[in-house]
Image (cartoon, rainbow, N blue to C red; front, side):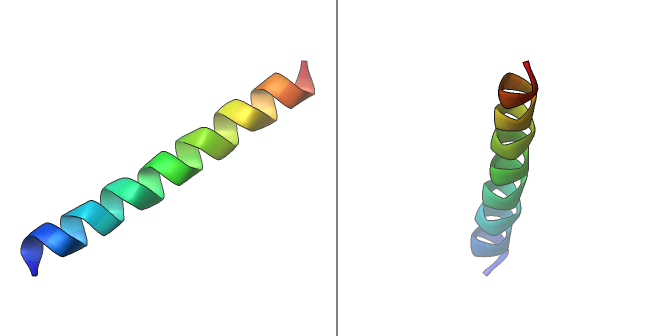
Length: 28
């Protein structure tokens, strides 16, 4: 269970990072 939650947290972080990167690229 601990591993599954860790993967979920990492997945959420990755999605946020991807959105931030896409937003910056589009802003340019």
